[in-house]
Length: 358
Image (tube, rainbow, N blue to C red; front, side):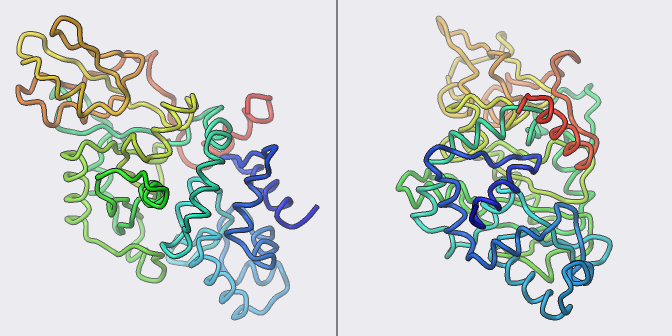
């Protein structure tokens, strides 16, 4: 078994999964991203965060040499690197959300994009085939009923208000589709990351740039006007993470739901869109231009929300000319389970896989 087969197996042991295929496309992807020595080093990484000093001691290598290797691999998007407790940490990264999203502009080639597109159905079905969900929708704030008790986890502005560091980078899904001559007209540079650490991205920043809290809010507001869906990790508490602004034409999460029947890729929010028939002007904007999931039907000029398809994202309401769309709380029985934190999430995902559900 060569190093790429061993690395593929180890990636598949992570909670997210990295399934083998009959064609071996997953191995061709790894060969595009890792040189053999880099793949060997990735195999030595723990899925839990470690300092460069701890990794050097564990592997019996000098600290300066180890740190240089880790920083080089992190800048190539081969491992995860982040600030935690004031220290720079390193760990093995899953393929998604992780290695693929970390690929810098010059490293995401047309050949790699073609391989990932070929792999997408298999990857989506594995990653989205068991719970807890990989990611979840965060609803737009504006159309929420005023009397609802909105939890902080469901309020993107509260998440941003609590975080201390922010960066923005290109959406890898739109970059991939652009290389395949399929990219839509939505904003490319709008994928946010946040951290509860001060100056989290001053040391290590990949392709993006550090932005202020005010700039992060402006990016979110522009995304809502554009009809993009907010998504993040499916946990209540996180020391940091991503805030994606997704479109159904390019986004791997939304495409997995619509094209590949992968229900556990993206969890709907705890809310459901509702159209006030008394004030609706029947303009069709919500159905024809805004809804990313084809969750609004029309019959004889009457528009209704299909509850089983609605993500509860709220983008249909943002531009409704008569303010006829609001978000209502879903019944408790219809709400998606959210893990407490990343450890809880990982343990539950792995347990489901061991039980033969993934």
